[in-house]
Length: 401
Image (cartoon, rainbow, N blue to C red; front, side, top):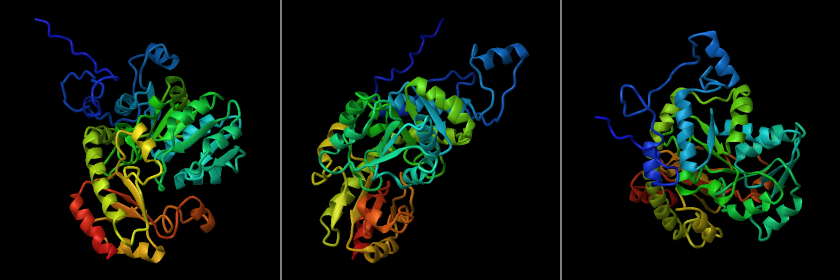
């Protein structure tokens, strides 16, 4: 008796929890519950005719793991499913994904538009590579009222891209992605969004009209602080170019083992984001009421300038927040006094982490520029982990006291 065929999950149906766990089923002769790890660098062929068919594109097949690997491909398919994109390309790190994407879109010295609030690593890439190479870079400030109109005035038909984050790192600004995408589409300028803070569980920029989505998979997608990875999702045409040219020849290739770890981590992504968010809400509420805290930057509290936009384009505000104390000495002392919260520049791990951008991630930026982007000497960024929120609040209370 024939067994009934199982349907492939529809990318438009099912909750993020289900999509993250099941992904896209792949047949396995041993009926393994978890996908196998293809830990290999190269692939052999049964004969030269097969070589010709694969190299010509007539037949699908893997050749060398710098260009493609079955475990990496499965990770890419799962991310595409979560972000509701046509295809994805994985990289060895988030910066690998960012640099390859911007290099592709800026070919022919096409102008790249970047916000001044950009993550320090992307900012450094623009300053140390794009600008010295002659790629036109226009900086804009997404915080003042009317910033979209000012950006529109600088956009030219066919510019390379507008690259941004929402929420921004580390200032937690929220940008209206739908309105921005409509503005850029009118001038045929691609919009690229670093969605690392929100994850595909909380925000889907492609559904808001953006063209490409980037993740530092090192963070929430992996979720355990034990790997490096990056991924870009979007239209298959653009992703195919990133796969065949920038992806292969720049050499920033995700390893099969890290792809396997990412597939494991993504299965709990939705559950982890629920806990990260619940903890961050509790921590933000505590900080907002503390007399030594000047300001809390968290899109989940009504006082945040981007609160209403965040409610429209995010399912919840996530696990990242920042807050400001009186000065650098006070901020550094708080970091030193914390016992549960580690001092570190990464994020998205089960363990809570805190960093002092003035001394750490933004240290290389001039003092005036640091202040201009919203990073003051007393500014702290916190990745709220999965611990009991009561313990985190107690730890912060002791450190602030």
